[in-house]
Image 1: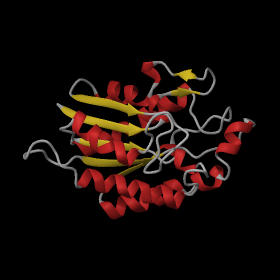
Image 2: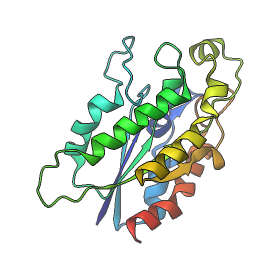
Image 3: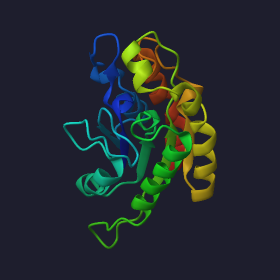
Image 4: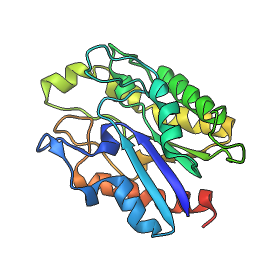
Length: 213
């Protein structure tokens, strides 16, 4: 059986901007991907609201620094055949980073952590890595989110191009989630149920290719 780890933020966790709760399990993109791939693949959803690539959020009541937590997560779920990373949206917050370039540097750090991870068993093969650019932030009338992500509409629109170049440089797979999904104007950042399902469906061909299925 192949094992896939989906490492992400609230877009992976399944935050619902309409209810301020969580999308149904079957609507979250890792679940949709699992259904599409079938029983021969185990898809693990590892999403945390507010998670960044490498940046500390001192306002949070948990550790949202993706780089600090990633080695522990890799040990928890290994051995792995593929790691899908969809992070960078929260890096757009000016108080944390605020630039697409900074998010790309953070993504590069995550790639290096996986490549040089001290796997538990000597015969563990390093997993493939698939970088996913989150859908770009859109304009919103939600004053709190507009302020929280000031400048994010412009900066997040640059992520796909920068991530694609990084994937090419590092020998990783790449998928632009913005090619199949759009953020909701309710808060400008999150996804409605249909758009989060669309990411799971859109990822299936790339994941099958990378797993050799």
